[in-house]
Amino acid sequence: MRTDGSTWLAALHAPEGSETERALSDMRDFVRATLTKGFGTQLTDADLEDLSQETMLKIAAKHETFRRDSRFSTWVAAVAVNGALAELRRRRHVHVELEAATELGAAGLVPPEAPDRVQRARSAQLLREAIDTALTTRQREALLAELGGLPLAEVARRLQSDRGAVYKLLHDGRKRLRAYLQAHGMDASDLLPSPGGHSP
Amino acid sequence: MTQPNSGDLLLRMLQLTRDAELDCETFLEHIAAYMDGTVESEELLGLMNHHRDLCAECAEEFAILERALSED
Image (tube, rainbow over all chains, first blue to last red; front, side, top):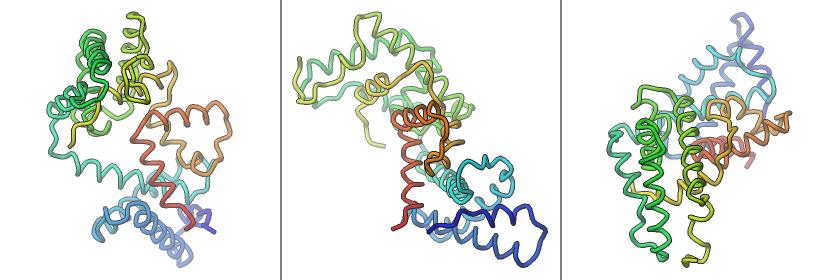
């Protein structure tokens, strides 16, 4: 059974000593094991070393924000996974420019080989009109980049914003698009392809 | 990057769009309690479930955490 990490939390508040060092060493081993199991071969030994170290520093800096509504070990694992995933996403997309991602997102609005082409062409047309008409320039840019596969944190980095602000921007944009469709007597369910792939 | 089917993805996101949603930062603030099944507020739990359905990135993060902490 997994530890709840309470000894690690106590050690973070304790003075230096062999007990404290042992607890923090256990926590570091747990962080490394968490990353190994969570990410498998996506992380090299050097990555594991660096990310474990970064996680320990983050935990030292922000353990006071632990809400005590979960096991401390789960919170530690969440900090580790969050940091590693952010780094992997950054690396995967480091050479992707915002404009390339938005072009990819816009191009994907017309699936060229769909079996129910008429319905999909109609859907794509209305969506494009909605995106062009109902969204602000910044919302359009962020939405198309997201649809083009750029993670929100990476969209935010390119817009010199943060993930939370970009989520709010996109949430407002989705509400505008939904209202636009409703004003045209449609909702998203009407435009999604039928499960059998045939036009209504 | 491969070309995704943006239209279907966007329509599914619009289907799930609500007036009140959690943002990613709030979801991640509570992800440990969500993982442990100790979210006490039913309202927050509903918002967490909804965000996980809507946000592919947070769903991926939760799935990795779940795998990392699995007992097998």
